[in-house]
Each structure stands twice: as C-alpha cells, then as structure tokens.
Length: 449
Ligand SMILES: NC(=O)c1ccc[n+]([C@@H]2O[C@H](COP(=O)([O-])OP(=O)(O)OC[C@H]3O[C@@H](n4cnc5c(N)ncnc54)[C@H](OP(=O)(O)O)[C@@H]3O)[C@@H](O)[C@H]2O)c1
Image (cartoon, rainbow, N blue to C red; front, side, top):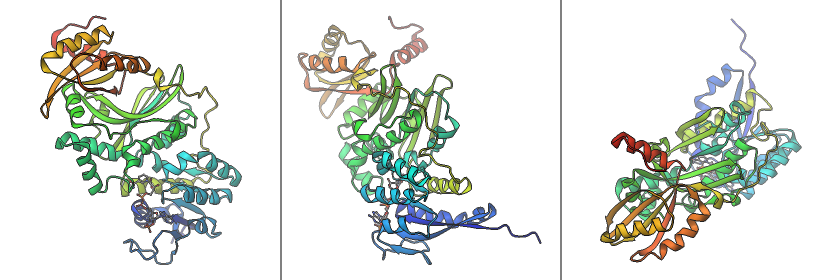
C-alpha cells in the first residue's frame, strides 16, 4: 500500500457566516477530498457572528462561535483569517490585528479594503504577510489575479465595466417591465438583490469602492472612493430608458478608470451604451469588465458579480492559493513603479452626450436648429411621447465635459421647452464612427466632418 501523504491542517478563523460565509462553509466540505489530494486540509476552528443562536443550515460542530471578531483575529490557534462580515471599523481592526501578527487575510469586504487600504498594507508589512481579495472586486470574475499576475507588466489605459449587479438588475427591470425606478428598486429589494442599505448600490458607492480596488491593481494608484466621481441611478426615469432605446442604446451604470494625457480619471455614472457593444448586453446580476491597453487593444471578462456561490468560490480559491503558495498576496502583490498618478478633473473628459428635452412635437426642428446655433453637433435624435408629454433625445458629437455643462445653461433658455434639459454621458467618445458605419451600411454614404 502506498503511504498516505502527510496532511497539513490549516486552521481558519471566519468572520461572518451570512450569504458568503455560509456558502464558504458548504464549499469547504464539498472540496475536502481535493484539498487532501493536495496534501492539506482546511479546518474551520473559530467563527464570529452577531447572533450565535441563529441556525445557519451548515455544520458548525467543533467550531468555537463568538460575537467578538477581534478575539477571533487575535486567537493564537488560527493560521488564516477570512473576513466575510462587511462593515468598516470592526472589520478593519480585526483584519489588521491578524495581519500585524503574521496571519494572512482573505477578505471579500470591498468597502473596508477600499477605504482603509493604507492601514491594511501597513499591518501586512508589519506582520510580513499579505491579503488576497479576489471576491471583493467582481466576485467570480478573476480580474484581480489577471491584473496582479497575468498582466502585471502590461501597459493599461482603461479599465471599465458594469460592476454592480443590483443597479444592473434595476435598470434591466425598468426596461423590461416599463416601470419607474421606485418600482424596480422595490422588486430588487424584495428579491434580495440590494444591500440592507440600498443607497450603497443605487448611489454608486459600491461600484466606486470596487473601482478603487481595480484601479489600484491596474495603475498602482490608490484613489479612495471619496475621490471617485460618483453618480447613481436614482434619477434615471422610464422616459430616459425609452429615449435611449429609440436611439439604439441601453442605460448602464458604468465604472471607468482611465489613464489619459492629463492624468487619471475615476468615475461611476449612468451611461448610454450602444447596443452593438458587449456592455449593453450585460444584464441583471452579471458583471463585465473591459481592459484596454496599447499592446493588446482590448480584453473582456464576463461573469457573475455577486451571489452565494460565485462569491464564496472566489473566497475559497484565494484561501487555497495562499495555502499552496505561502507568501502569495494581492496586497502588496505586484507593485507597479510610480507613474504620474495625479487625478485629472472629470470636466476635462471628452465624451459624447445624450440630452433629453421636453418639447412640443411641432417645435422639434426649431429646437434642433437652436442646438446647432449653440455649436452642438447633433449626431442623432429621436422623439417619443410618454405619459402625454413629448420628448426629444439628442446625442452630441464629442466635446469636453466643461463645454457640455456650459451649453446646458444655454439649452435651458431655448424657447418652448418644458422641464429643464437633462444630460447623461455616453459610454464612449466614438459615436460618430458608429453612426457613420450604420449610415454607410444603409445608404453607402458618410457624414460630413
Ligand atoms: N453577497 C454577495 O454577493 C457579495 C459579493 C461580493 C462581496 N461581498 C462582501 O462580502 C461581505 C459579506 O457579505 P454577505 O452578503 O455575506 O453579508 P451578510 O449575509 O449580511 O452576512 C454578514 C455576516 O457577518 C456577521 N456580522 C456582521 N457584522 C458583525 C459584527 N460586527 N460582529 C460579528 N459578526 C458580524 C453577520 O452575523 P449574523 O448572521 O449573526 O447577523 C453575518 O453572519 C461583505 O463585505 C460584502 O460586501 C458580498
């Protein structure tokens, strides 16, 4: 009989046993034979939750359960700390306590990591250990690994995506059910697709926190969420969704970090995405991330950005990575040498814009003429009637955001408009090319430049 390989047991301290933590406990049981085949085993020895009496539908026999996360982090028996608890102050204190005494940390807590990255890095340095946080950025899309290792020496100019499943569900629901934002939010909350505090999702905060993590790995620049230009989806109305569709676009909450000539811009806001683009087809709880760089042009990743098993599985893969290769870590991970990481003002962005105007149908041509007089190049326009009112939606050619803002004041003074004009950005600055392609397909002609 061949001798059984010696099994190394790794004792885990777990903070949180909710959606992600519960999924993780189940996955550990499921993969135990795989661990043992590779010479190790994972043993959950300590757990912190708020309510120790709650039935969690998983076997916790032999696990020391407490309500004190700091005590778990400081327990000399654990070999690794796994934080799937959420929140900030306690999570950071527990994570840093473990790191500082040399205990590696796996965390899904994007908020704590994005807001307190410096503290985590300092504690990891003190304890000569590290942190893995794949699940924090886009759950089941292994984008952190790609940025930290596979593309470590790749020049990147853009990382952008649809990275918040709740808002994506809400926008998809509004489009399919033809309802207003409030009804879609209620449906998302009823189905458990929003955080306990939905403002984190709908105000764009969750996406901004994830963008901080992604930009850190893509550009080596730490830009805290407070410095990410952040707008949510609460002001999107059914009329915007319909006008966008009429113009062959869908509205998505897009997060983008770009390194341009003026520096870095990090922004989260609703954007019109042309229906020919992959991002336009990313629905419900799916996430997509697109990378651009001069060497490889474009890379696209699509997968589940939330949920029990997609997230727990990313957490488990991080744990296994750290067990198999002690010293593996995404923080500090591969450190990109200092570049010019100064932040550019969003007003210097050059994009195409969508403007919504409430008009009288017979005034449409006059309004378009007035827009032309303001030097706004309208590349396409559409009209709809919604709830007894008429709306004109226009898409402009590329212009600097500061110019768009200035133009909005003048647009508001155009004769015969109801409601103040409303603007949204397009996802890209190449709408003219798209229109030209469409026109030449249909008419064999091109727009005048
Ligand atoms: N859910 C997802 O799809 C997803 C995706 C990516 C990342 N994440 C991140 O993963 C983390 C966990 O998310 P989740 O959805 O699993 O949350 P959850 O279902 O609300 O679970 C949180 C768990 O942490 C425990 N907990 C919270 N605060 C605590 C405290 N101060 N002391 C002790 N225990 C505490 C709770 O205990 P009780 O059960 O007793 O209340 C619960 O077991 C968050 O940081 C989240 O942002 C989640």
